[in-house]
Length: 364
Ligand code: OGA
Ligand code: NI
Image 1 (tube, rainbow, N blue to C red):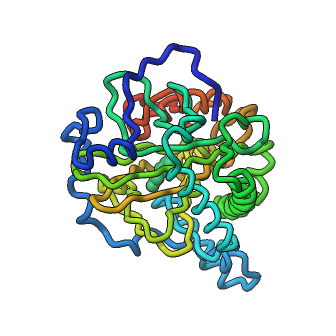
Image 2 (tube, rainbow, N blue to C red):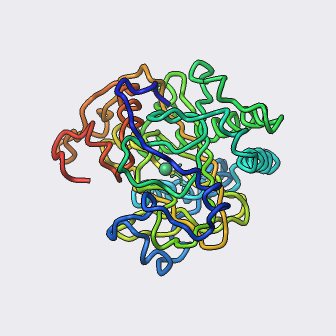
């Protein structure tokens, strides 16, 4: 999560969605009502859950060659064709997942005055509030967010780490360590699936940056008019998303121009390829546009970790993935600059990646 933008930001009044819902359960202020084209109309009618690949990490780690190979193939297909998969048998203790769920829920259920002690300043992305709002006429997401930079410690803003619930900090630290190991492990397997050395990403990334965002989506009386979270791809290398147990279906990914819902699988973690891997692989593994929709009666909470290289590093397509048939599609750039570009622009599909594209500035 990058620094404060250097330009002044006027965002107008931003309703706290939980408070709005409490005070006026059926009111949808104009700023939340999406233009026709953006409304989640056909959302429910789509492809079945089983279409989003499920990767068994335990099988992937097996020494038995056949079992390993078949899972490795699935991982490769998942990265090439979906950019999204759910990982099961990931080795993270269930209690770690349950604990983070609990502190996140407890945090959002605190009185507004308490949460406001950790405000997300306009135009920034850490703290409690709505991120990616940069103007007074921008549509708002039906969501309250709480986001923190976690690793390395120098990106933390200690003033924003809440003192309530009491075990929040420690729980987040334990959780982040586990997610870090998972990301390292997945990146190794992803590298191998590309025919590269297993540790290529780890060596390149330096001290990886990890940030967490907790998204709380209150129920909405008109889910057909609003979005929980605007369409976007993630700027990270990998993103790990935990959907809280028994929550409604909310995450959707754009596949072949259709919004496909991601059905929560118990205890699985949803993984997606971020823009950084798209650039490094010269577009072989692409980041995929996704969004969140809301539910009429049920709330939803997700806990999202963004895993990315150190801000210091320069990156661009890896030479092994550039040849005559696959000409270089992205320029080299400093990752910190990309992060800054990402967090100082509103979410709009995959447009943020135009920053790095060489050929066409218009294609998504
Ligand atoms: C995100 C994200 C989706 C969700 O935070 O980047 O895509 O379901 N969240 O909360
Ligand atoms: Ni996302």
